[in-house]
Length: 427
Image (tube, rainbow, N blue to C red; front, top):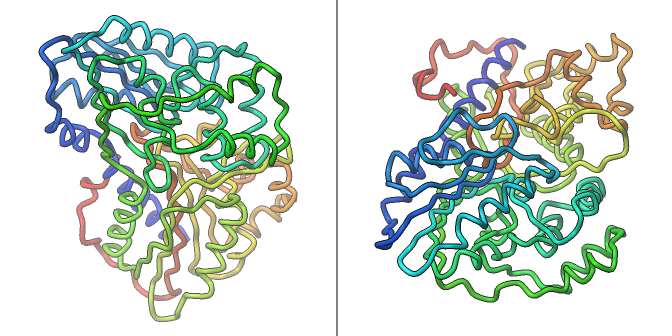
């Protein structure tokens, strides 16, 4: 099964390499026409450093700010402050970074411009609220633990925020805002990516209150009052461009799979269910569709959720992969992996996980039962024991997750060389 592991590495590294924002940001900036005044760069998200670096190679700026996750900056950038903050839950550094961003745009006027570079992760990294930090963090913890999908989570967070739901874009006025967005949201909805700091919100108060009721969120009277505040109804001075998405990630993965000799199919680029259920369904689809005479790759992208029932360590991609292990057990020639394109999966140093037909037996030999591990949300340690952790380090991009199930008929020879060069797809 070592060959399937090597195939998996080629697929995810190649797909992520193609999703790096450098070229896409420079292409988007061909349409940027700054005003006669000052131009400031505000970059927010897990890919903020790389996006800002690309932008600084294409335009001249009068200072700016990068706000990214701890460990995701890659060194100083000329004339730009770099602040790191908490993710997936906002911390004091998130609040401080957001206040600094507001300071940098408050003195802008007619003829000035803001280049706003946005990527996933901004919902936690870029945050300011009238609520005390601990209360705000508690609400976030409730949302992340209850099984709410990302759109439901953001629907609540943006109304508690002073920079989400278009409020940062509003704060930039009258300066013009040119927003370049790397999408980690299904359907590339601008109001949902990082909770839409510079986009008019499409949700209603009634929908937000329905989320709170559905999951039994415990909210103070102050929090309820903040939810009721109106969001900006129009932002005529803001122009936005999406420069990368999960659909592109999936299509690149499919191209690489074909180069390796697989028949490849993208099942969906909008996966959003529970991680363990998605992993089981993908594994079953592989077993159902495999044929003795053909290699097969089934691909899906999106962002699943984990419902916390234990106190273990892991992330949605690790849980998705591990849940497939019992289904693939003993099915020679099968494997499945799932990775976060940003290189971090939940609060861990892993990007995701890999399992094959031998993973289940290997774990059982060590006294580890997959259902018990999943109940404890401890996929990290189980995959570590099975040699199934995928560790890439921060990648510099963030366009959701990639999950691929692989089948190579036992005994069928491998291609000696794929139809692409390794260097083209290396991170």
